[in-house]
Length: 175
Image (tube, rainbow, N blue to C red; front, side):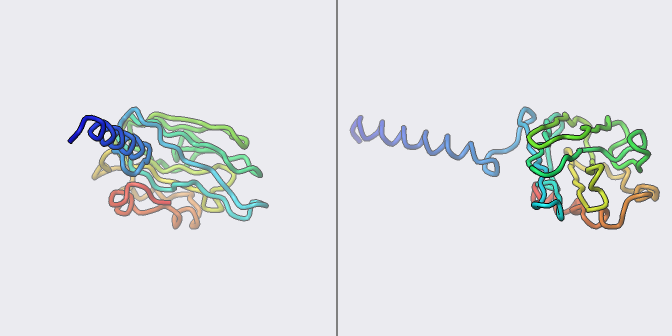
């Protein structure tokens, strides 16, 4: 193979490789990666959601919620008794979070380090089923999900909207 052809093939492979690493589902996630969750809604606000609503990440990864809904403010709020008296639906030793109201175009980030299942919701839209679930590492076998009080005070529409742990573990991302 001549030198020019070899250089062309090497350059082509590097360009292809660089392109593949920019596609999130091809590249394995690293703790340094920031994972975005978008907050959206239909015009007029009839439907609102987090996308993705189910996510598997590694301990130490940053999750960033971005409000891309031009007609609504939203929150990303962990289910925890210290935040509005909700049932605890995050690991026992994890820090709860509340973004406060995010206006369109604003964002909020947390770094999740404790393995387990984290459920969260949008404060003004929980009754519309605007909830999400993040699994960090492996779900703990005897975590909050085994407690009877974990469903106390949650609207039925919210409980039905959470993607299953099994589906998130299988797919990694659930929209």
